[in-house]
Length: 231
Image (cartoon, rainbow, N blue to C red; front, side):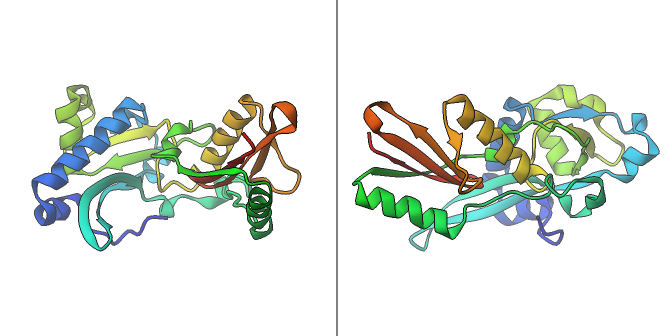
C-alpha cells in the first residue's frame, strides 16, 4: 500500500523541476495508451460512489545505479488504504508468492541438469490486468489533472471547480488492494494459453513439457520471474 504522507505532486514539481514534469507526462501518456481509466462527471456519482472515492498521488522517485543518480521515475498510484476490505473476499485480497522450497527446488534441478536460467521483470505489470468485479473511482489531484488535459483535451469536460478530475479505473492501478491478485490471475491465464500447467507443488510454479523429454519451468514472484529450460 502507498503511504498517505508522501509529497504531493506540486511539491515534487518544486523539488525536481522540469524533469519531474517530463517523467510525469510520460507516465500519464502510458496510462492513456493502456486505457487504464475513463473520466467521470462528479455530479453523476451516487452518494455511495462519492463516499468511496479514492485519492491518488503522482509519486516521483530518484533511481540510482552503483550509488550514482541515474534518473527520475514517475508512477501514478491509488491510495488504496481507504478501501473497505470487508467488500472483498479473502482470495481477492491475497496474492501468492513461491515457497522457499520450490525456489530451491527449481535452482537445484537447473544446476544439476545444466539448464539455461533467465530472470525477468514485467514493466507496469498491474496495468495489464482488467478490473473484473468491484467498481473503483478515483480523484486525480489538480496538477495531474492539468497534465492529463494537456495530453488529451477530452478530459476537460470532467474538470471540477477545484481543478481535480474523477476517473473510473478499468485496469488494476498500483495501490488498490486487489491489484496483486488481478495481476497474478492475468499472468496465470497467459501462461495457460501458452501451454504451461500449474504445478501441484506451488501456485506460483508453472511447467511446460518440450520436445524430446525436455522441459521449461517458471516461478513467479509478483512481477518478477525466473525461467529455467533444457532447450
